[in-house]
Length: 274
Image 1 (cartoon, helix red, strand yellow):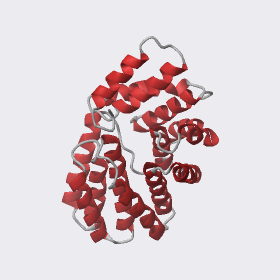
Image 2 (cartoon, helix red, strand yellow):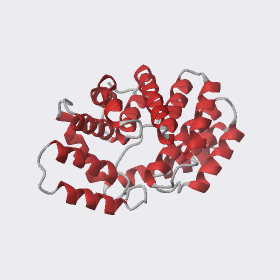
Image 3 (cartoon, one colour):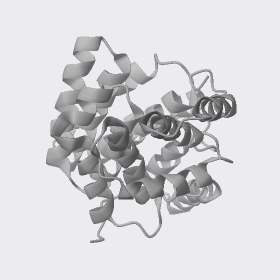
């Protein structure tokens, strides 16, 4: 149901499945419910609030580790969340490779951990996790996993200033993203790929390539909704690089309006918080 873009029906199905459960199975389904609800603008704020509740879990079971990944993402989305708190939750969720081993490279929980680690600057851990994702994706033949691993490579190499490799990784991720089903979860990941690849291209002075990429992304993803909103941020960066401050202001303002509408704050830069 989620892949078919019927997010509300997917949430309703999980609600029915949870009825009468009160153990590890219920927690696992509740995590699935709030993760799915993030892809519906009207359900996202309540989902994020529930995800924050998971931060107190110990992470001693597979379901608790997935729940901690939820909490890490929600802390990253919270305007009062700090990088220290979000990254610690992500580390506990990943549990030295247990999360990838248990859930596989296609799990949304992996991305939920990578998000705060990226903007918290934890690139050594991101790189190790990316290697685990790539190895699992190759074993499974998972296109989504390979896209995720390539996106990780793009982000890490861009941060290190290794722009040639960052762009190469980003281009692999973008080619894979273009072949995935056009469901909300896939579109949102595709927008993330476009955003980080475009930033690497802009940093290397390839503004023409970045414009072409973002035009292609706009044809595939609605940039005025939460699924494609990350591309608005990249368009703002592109406008700054090409000396168009008025366009940049318009893009960044549109980007912020979507974030506000769905109740979260996109970081998109290294945190300077404790």
